[in-house]
Image (tube, rainbow, N blue to C red; front, side, top):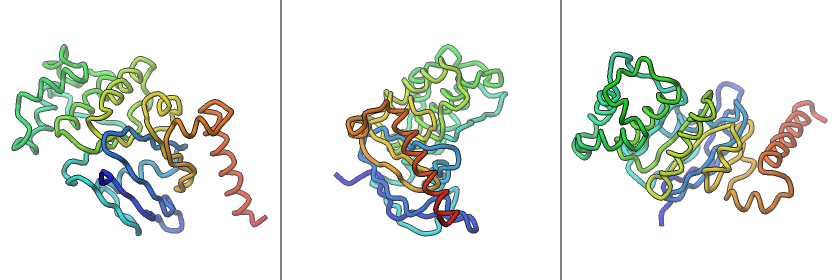
Length: 240
């Protein structure tokens, strides 16, 4: 089967800074794939290029689905506070009204656990509720490739667990590319991952293969990988 996303040699430069450095990535249909790395690794830059918010410097991107079935949820979704949950989701449905029936609105609201707040104005929503509402606004378009940028950032443990459960429930239905620097979240919900640092790929493969090749815990192994790469980069810059 053709990969749902295939990236080859993707590079993005901001002046003299390479935010992405010859990045390669393939995603299979129905997988939940984690983008792992510290702040500044290039995760958000990659996602923004994939939906056309930024232009690549060079490289190839091929989709195995129509680009109108690719959707991004930013890390801090926000909404008009005077709208209700149902109005926000229905507004998000409108561009896809030819193929998404109005009856899908309540179904998606229920899927993200906001049915009791369907007629509440969203201005008083907590961060966790806004994240769930954000998921509803992207799921209503029935995406085949869903890009999530730090969906659990700044959430309390309960809010994180709610969002992770929703992401896990998408396995096999929608392909998810899930960016985060919270390592435990990747291990708990992802099938595979790409570890990035300074725009470069340090590991790309399954979670199980990564764990089987290491004697340390998942988090310690990734931190060691990132630390070694950062130290090597520092040595290169200093010319030793």
